[in-house]
Amino acid sequence: MTARYRTDCEGFHRRDFLKIGATAGLFGLTLPQLLRLEAQAAPALEDKKKATSVIMVWLAGGPATIDMWDLKPGAPEEIRGEFKAIDTKADGVQISEHLPKMAEIMDRVTVVRSLQHTIPSHGPATVFMTTGNKPTPAVQYPALGSLMSKLLPADKGVPPYVSFTELRNGAAGQAGYLGTAYNPFIVEGGAGGKGGNGGNLRVRGIQLPNGFTLDELENRDKLLKGFDQGFEGADKSADLMEGLDAFHKQALEILRSDKTKKAFDLNLEKAELRERYGQNPFGQGALASRRLIEAGVRCVTISIGGWDTHGKNFEALSKRLLPQLDQTLSALVTDLDDRGLLERTIVYCAGEFGRTPKINKNAGRDHWARSMAVVLAGGGIKRGYAHGLTDPQGMAPATEPCTPDDVAATIFHRLGIDPHQEMSTTTGRPIQLFRGGKVIEALLA
Image (cartoon, rainbow, N blue to C red; front, side, top):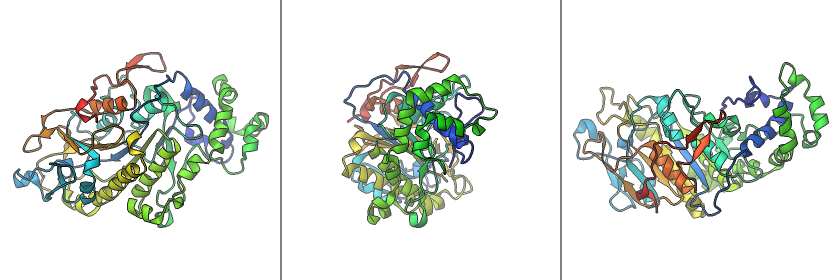
């Protein structure tokens, strides 16, 4: 998967910089520039934080959470659907029968059942859920990972924000008003590989192109001579050249570091654990996400699509979607917890909206943003808790309603970041992180 990235050199993208051949040299110049931009105006944070990283598990298409986390067994047949509710390890919390592994670990997570917003359209709703800000034509808001990339210092030798997916609407998942230095590094290659071993995973921007060595990259004069063809027709801006001077050493440290490379070598994990996550791109991507967090990456986004179930909703959920999610999400939370990583890592499982309580004529459910559910775990979020209730037919929250910006504010509060602090756009305009978001105190452990 790839995503386009603009740099301060107008007309160029990170993807273009990494092409093998003439533009390979441009890669070497761009990484220091991005590092320099990334470090500008990064405020110091308190050393003691409840959480230091986030893994977003994105359910693209809008999952039918009424059939997953908020079943309505007492509702009429045309609303309650085909699935039964089962008890879980969390007292009083029931979920779908097709999530049995999650039922076994519900005492480690929180389900928020009273989430709502007003955008039943894929693109804008994706922006709202992934940025914590309702979209507006006037401002392109940064993704949560981009904000973390700027506000939390990343460990040396690893990218701060990595994404296994290109989110809908193009702008979603990107850096918005922060500038392109805070865009995610996109994972390329199959997450499964042969046998699902993840052997061909790589992050664009970390490996050297063919034919280039670190020694050549270290020698600026030699580098520039070899890049003349790559710069034909390009503007060798002073800003870009200054990046080499200030951050060339850091760029080389990232390229030299084994941290990211080792994080993607899933063969270092036991076969049993790889199997537990699921031998498919989603499962192996989740395992790689855990390894990236261990390496010091601040935010990772993984995704599984197919949740736009306008037709045959129950067939899609029971035969394909829920078994995969159940296996992988439960493995991720358990693995993080067993390794002592869950206390500092927030797992956020969500889609852009829910689906209609009333089943349509095609045995499907349509878009519905007025009520939905998400799952949170780790980083100082309560364990074994269900927040809020929807009405008996699942149409809207009945108690403790909250919105995507409230969830974002709560996550950043746990990261030690004031959710109402002001940021500046590239033009100097002040903007609050989450202008409408309030910390949901009941979610805090």
